[in-house]
Length: 144
Image 1 (cartoon, rainbow, N blue to C red):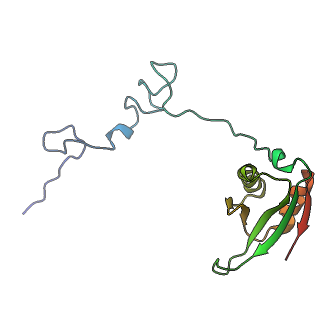
Image 2: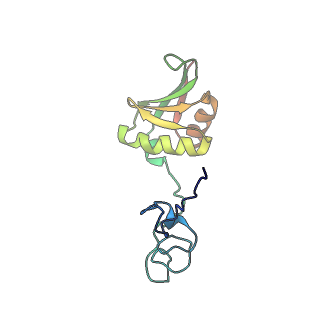
Image 3: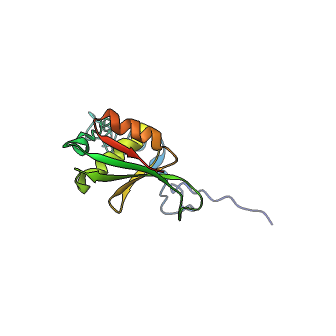
């Protein structure tokens, strides 16, 4: 008994009728970076994926009007992992915490998110977070 090889490219009569990956081949029309297709800028269409330039995040709105921050470490309920909690003591609108979390994450090279009106930074980075906030002109209290 011999095995027969079936062409999966979709071009032969015995092959599959539709191949989802056929469009990814180099030179296929509509694929960005390939020759001759609507996905190539300047050659008959818009780019399928536009590259955006990095946006500089400015947490200065969160630092205005004498903002006062409490920076502390926490381990409870996180499987033994330490996180740094940044909470506002005075002068900060909760809507500005997203910008601050994004700036902290980018500056410190770690994850940061807003949860329950506080910024949660992954890792034991309380000293670095405090230095960052002080460099932006905020008052900082470091807890345990």
